Image (cartoon, one colour):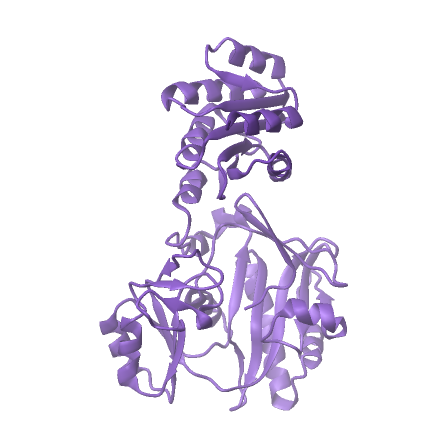
Length: 424
C-alpha cells in the first residue's frame, strides 16, 4: 500500500508530509505499528466492513482454518510490517508473501513455507524479516478501487479526509500526475463528520445507487474510529467495491497519537516489537528516541531538528552517523547513562558526538550524566561534547574537572570536525 506524501523520520516519529497541491499536513506517528490483521480486527470491531479472515501461528492452525473458513478461494498473507510482500521471497525458497488457492489442502502447505522463515521485500533488511503469523482470508474479487485517508491537518486545525477515485495504486503518483483526482474535505472536530459530507465524499469516489449509501456509512464509521482511538492517520488503500456489491476496506495503515497512550492502553498493548530494532525498544523504556544507521559516529542530541542538523554536518565533513539518540527536554542523569549504554552497544561506533542545546535542558545534568556514564561503562572510543545554553559554564567545569579524556567543542561546526578527525 502506498502512502500519500514524503516520509521523513525523526527519532521514533515518522512525519508524512503531504505535497502536490495539498495542504501542508504533518502526521506524527509513534513507533507503534499494527500488523494488517490487527488493523482489520480493529475495523471489524467498529462496524467497518473487511473480508472474512483468521490468523494462524502454526501449520496445524492453518489446516484447521482452511477446513472451517467456508470460502470459494483463500488468500494467504504473511504478516510483517514491511510493504511489497506480494513480490517478496522467503528464505524457504517460496516466492511471494501473498498467495491464492481454491484448494484447502494447499493452505497448510503454503503456510509451512512461510511461518518460521524470513521474508525479503524491497522494504526489509537484506536478510529479511521473520514471519510468525499468517492471515488466511476470503479472496474477494474487486470490481473497483478507491483511496480514502483521514489525517490530522495543521492547516485546517483538525481532521481532514483525503479521497481519490484512483485507488489501489501509488497515490503519490496520482497526486503528481492528476491532482484533480485528489479531494480534500476538512472536518469540524467539534461537530464530527456530517451525513452530507460522508455522502459527498462517497459521490466523489464514484459510488452509485445502493453502494453510495453503504460507502457513506463506512466513511462515517471510519471517522468515528479515528476519533475513538486517538488516531493521527487512517489510510485505506484500496477502499473498494466488490463484484458482489459490497463496500470493503481491503488494506489499512493506522498511526496513533503517542500522547494518548494513557487512555488507549488496549491499542498500545497491541504493539508488536518482533520486527523492531532492540535498541529502539530499549531506548523507549527510558523515554529516549533511538534510530540506528550505517555509519560509525554515534550522536546524542536533544530535539529532532538538532539531530538532523548534527547528521548533516557530520556528512559535510566526511563522516557518517552510526545512530542518533534524542534525549528530549526533561532528561535526567540516569537517562544520559542509559543513552550512552545504548549508543555504544553498536559495535560499529568508533566515536561519540554529544550535541546539546540547553533551553529547558540543564547542561549541568547532561555533563554529570556524561561523566558518570564514561566511568561506569568504561568508554573506549573518542568522545566529543558540545554544550550550549542553560548552566553551560557549570557543565563545562564538570567536564574539565572530571579527569576524563573528553574533547570539548565551541560550536556544532567545531564538534563535527573533531568527531570526524577522532576516527583517524
